[in-house]
Image (cartoon, rainbow, N blue to C red; front, side, top):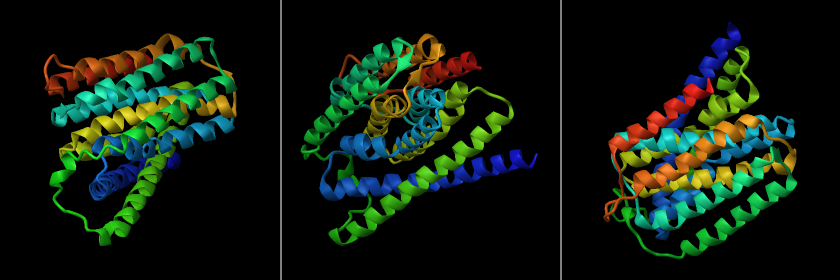
Length: 317
């Protein structure tokens, strides 16, 4: 009983810290973009996408080093499913999300290519060092492409920030951005610890823990940042955050178990989990793309995404 109580306290305190740190992280990330005239899409893809994927990378590396690759693989794929079905779904229900047309032609396409490449690597029911290097190569290509895009000086949503940040505030803004990120990752880790402890008490398998509890816990930063961003009407960061995070999960987090501890891939991943991840990646384009200039994910489509998530969770358990 004391163990369960401690786990619940960890979950609750983790949620409270997530709410505060997500707001700080989002606000200061937006200020940095405003100061350096960086596209909000680039901020969403790199700063938010990579940084909020830090929990997945940490958990995947720790699990792989302990030989628990089922949890690592489940964490990567499960987080991608959570990001599109749950996070984007909830964000769209809160407020319809306007999607930039360019992201569908470029960043989404890169995500789709990465997802399609991951399939054959998993299909032989083995994730080894070579597979990890292939995925890592895709990550390097994505970095090269994104940094080239960062040279674009177009300035959209941040033109009307409530507080214009002067150069003298740059240092403070960077410090608060880092503090927000540290608390964000730490609070997510706290939630994961509490959630995994509860799951193990009830004897849930490692793969299921990775696909559900750990995936949810490590996706909490993305959820918190996306909700904070949509409330501030910074929609480019919401979609950029989801696509960026899924890219890092597919080409970086999924590569980690192959590089650290090559092992067999559970058959359920191929028969159940990867197809759902692929379906949701395609569905992301379907709900975003309209046959006009208004690429908007509306509330109904948000409920559709949540419905897919509910069906997947039902199938999982």
